[in-house]
Image 1 (cartoon, rainbow, N blue to C red):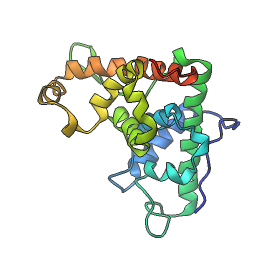
Image 2: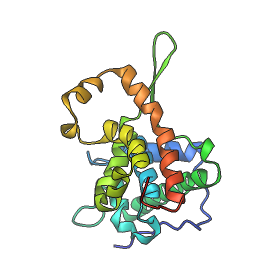
Image 3: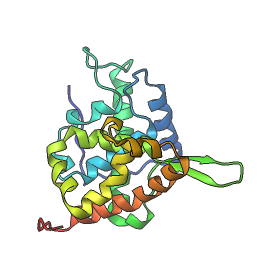
Length: 212
C-alpha cells in the first residue's frame, strides 16, 4: 500500500485551529487503543523531525501507520475506507509540516500541545506525559539512530525530562516513579520540555564534533 512521504519542500499550509480540532476529533474516534491522541501525535511528529535520521529518507509506511495504531490485514483498518485514511494522512502531514515550519522559521514561537489543568486557585498545572510518550514511541522505533544523543552530555540532558515523562516506567528508579505522582513535580518537569526540544533542534542543525 502506498503512503505519502514527508517532503520538507511541500507547499502544504499548516493546519488552522479548526483543522487541528478536526484532526483531534478524528484521532479520538479511532477504535484502536494503540492510536495516538493529538498530544501524543504532536510529540511523535516532533521526534521524527528531531531524529538524527532525516525523515524524508523514510517511506511513509515506516511511520504513518503508528498514528492510527497500525494497519489491519486488509490494509484499511481501523478505517472504513481508503478515503478516510487518506484524509487523516493529509492532516497529519500538514501538521508535521506546520511543526517543521515553526521550528525552522520561528523556533521561539513554537508551542507543543500539552495537557493543562486549571486548579481551584486559578493556577495551571501542565502535564506533558502524552506528548512525551508520543516522542518516545518515535525514539524507540529508531533506537540505534537516537543512541548517540543519549550519550552526549548536552543532548542527554535535554532528553532527560522527556524520557522521564514518556519512557518505560519499569526502567525508572522507585524514587523517580514516586516523584512522578507529584503533580507539581510533573508540572515543573513538563515545563522543561519545550526548552529541551529547542536544544535538540539547535544541536541537530549544528555540525557534530562528537565532544558534546
